Image: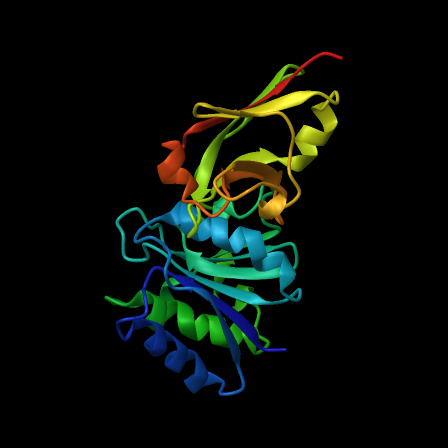
Length: 257
């Protein structure tokens, strides 16, 4: 199946998104192009990686994922393709693809100069043709040579002891809910049975299962569909009402039985 996902910070008011799609479809009109989002915060590599990391495993293995973030920036060291968990990702070598997994890619390819041209729109002129051809059956090796190490960015790390997990807000969603970097797997391993979740001036003594487990206006905390701790206020903009922002600390305190 010739399936391509497309993630960018292009927005939906200009010609950029349809221009990239037109380029891909001119190579293979049978392509199935799925928009993840084009409303990533401008230049926000971490936002793009967060969104794509949350959903790429839900697509069939072999899907090609085109990532357009800061592709013309001076921080970009060429254009690359990687194979990760049987998925193919194409994008600028600026760190965005390094944030998709805790594991190193099985294959890394730096696209060769023969495929690179002077362009003010490299996503259309460079990455789109390669994405279309790879989705149609070509290998990423056909467009370049091995790259030993992609450019890496280091995400915010949580800290965990037998007494406490300290995490941080890594994303505020459209509703004002705050998603942290505290994973359910770590909580489950350390949880002695009694604990509290502390954020801002609030403290919750139990985890909820859904938003509506609490009354409107009350705080909630639960592990969401991507198994990260999420906090907020039911029917309220949690970030504003709690005074929390990106990188604000969140604590899970364990109490001995």
